[in-house]
Image (cartoon, rainbow, N blue to C red; front, side):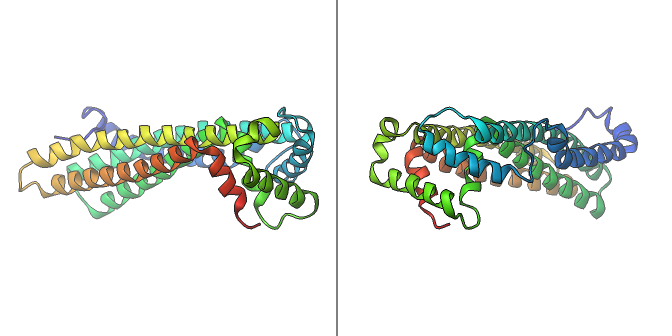
Length: 277
């Protein structure tokens, strides 16, 4: 019995012809992940200047008292949305190719054994996990690009007008965090975006945690039903089942942390701006 994998009839062909193709395809997606966002950008904002543009636009935005994004801030947020949208799409494609490659390699190990096959399958699985995290982070960034840009305000050592503006934001949050909607539209928008930012990641992490938990079921079933003498299959099933449970628990912790911040986005934003810069 095999753990969730491609049809047995496809496995020999995939093992002989598909591993190289899937490896090349995965490499292509890695390159696309690094280069595609800027290549598709059609504005003057890019990864090299987005922090500077956003910082300058944020100062004007805060002073305006208006929740609408205009000028440099609008350009930075729009670029950041497209940047994360492209990366999310490429990450999903990379995850699919690495996931299929890992399944093929695990089935090759199940049939023939070998430390190299086991190491290759494990390494590919870890890379797929990295692709999964990247996809989640970029979906989160595309859903709330303004909130995703906020760490750029506090990175390094803000000075001049930006430092003064951040001090005003911090003071407003500490003075009357419950009145942000009545006293500052920009702060209202920041709190709202911060809630969306964390809620999206909480929802994604919940789905992933459930998926890993479900994936552990066939692994434990295989372990229980396999013959004691079939050590290779039992080791593989134990590894896949155990790692799935651990990952499910890890993402469940992520759900709790982000759900807490989403429900108290004002407090989370206060803590965010309360740190030193």
